[in-house]
Image 1 (cartoon, rainbow, N blue to C red):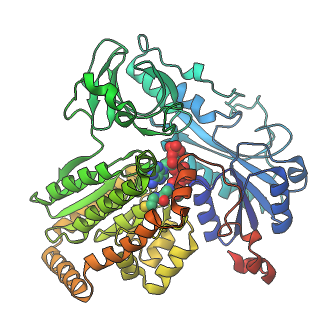
Image 2 (image 1 turned 45 degrees about the horizontal axis):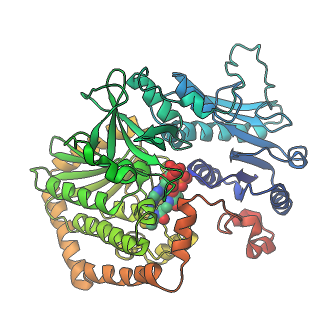
Length: 568
Ligand code: COA
């Protein structure tokens, strides 16, 4: 089938659908929902058999849904309608939620139902649920709907609230007043639900030191308590605030009217205001280490997978400490939502000199990658529970083995960030695994990649587990088996010998120098593309057109061939 993905942005969910539909032989093209005229033009050019809308903020024009089957992916159970589906489910403490694939018609979210898939609702942020459970359920729902479209006798189910399995209802757009925290009355669980219901967007409006800020990235602060609403202190990048029955850590804030009106670490936003507060040492950490048998697991669940200079430095120290332990294998765990998305574009944007901060950040991530690549005491594994992008993919590849949860999405390229050349020793690591020609194609194509393709190319050494619990349980078995392998010493010797041979052929330092020469031009040269792209990314400037890499119907070279089966 020719399937057009009509979407507000090519986000993780749309990327996953793109990968999986293409894998099943469909011809898939993408169009950003910019305005009705552009959407109509894309339908005209592509002539799709089916339009799927994974993430839309506006209704599909009637001129399109009247003549084409348009399926909307709604992150709610059957009967749920409205723009704040997940927000309400989290705030109300639902224990089961779902995704419904329904046909677009004149009434928002009220069209015939093609598929609906439910899942248990974890206690997690909206963004985390979206990237995990919602994405998996949406994929299952869309695949079911596509299959059903090809069955001539299938008729979608009209929305009928008298049916026992239609449990949802029409819910309004959630307002800040619905999420507002009453620090004197709300217990920790309530505060967490309120913040999580708006994390990543829009956040919960609150006041700290009399400043209006939006709150994100909340966690229970175990063992801490104080006058409800009072600030108890700070630790790493987070501040601690007391609730009715305990306290919460808040890792990120956004000061909409401040000098840098985008998300930043909480301590960075409050800065000097914190001077009267105590530092709670060991209170909150975005890095932690644990051991099981002869395997050390290093976790670094950095918010949004972004790694600032300071986080890279702390992680390098933690990694070097792990290397001193009497273990055999070190597993680099990243976080449950992202493994890494490379350097921290928000802290760079907020720096006095973004060019200098970019330089410091890339060097700090390179220092970390260098320690991993040159490790001679341990075998190393990168374990991807969540997605990885740009420098994050190559940092993962610095380890001896890269294992991923099935369904993780990789974006092994930098060019979308204003033609950034990239570093993290990718010019050493990528061709070594996939060969020169494929390395060139991967970095030029700028496309998201699924685990199957990454496995075939050699970018991944294994992928398993349908969800994080399954992945983690198999990961532990594999890591332990590696540590106890009768051949462990030989495996380690071979790795060290290979590294020495590579070093003799071309020193690691030479790769770094060459990459950084190109990055220097990106940061300090005449072409401002990287700085513009970073600004647009951080300030979320809407895209004015769909990149040709994914909008195949706009690619004249491909269109003129008039052979769409080759296009995907
Ligand atoms: N620095 C700071 N923030 C980052 C980030 C980075 N490197 N990568 C992602 N984020 C943030 C996004 O701004 C977004 O923030 P939000 O919480 O306000 O929504 C959040 O992480 C999720 O990103 P989003 O783009 O919505 O996720 P996605 O899964 O749809 O897409 C990527 C993932 C990796 C394709 C995309 O985030 C991206 O291109 N990131 C930049 C990668 C990069 O160029 N890094 C620098 C070079 S090493």
